[in-house]
Image (cartoon, rainbow, N blue to C red; front, side, top):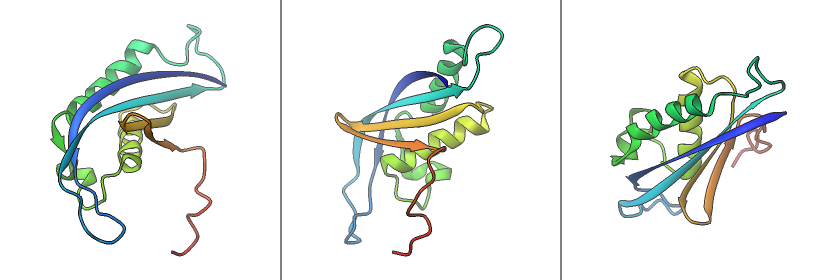
Length: 130
């Protein structure tokens, strides 16, 4: 498997619903996003994807999140905008934009706090009731 990764950042606010049902105060982060693209074989130019093309797509996406309240993003309205949810959102948006070989998205909302969405890893808890 061949892989590349590109990174970008944005500043945005969110407010999380906590386990006890209370809401955190609205607060912001300088989010970091790292997107992995994979292929089993390289294209005719010897690439997974041109870095510039991958970076352009990611920059356009995170540009739409910059200085946003994540709860006001239509696709995130009504969900708890955790870093995990944001990672899935970025993945889905890149897929919808035609980046079929996106394989994983990492989102950090603070140093040392990173969430990931990897479409190739099925959720072993998905069928379990809470």
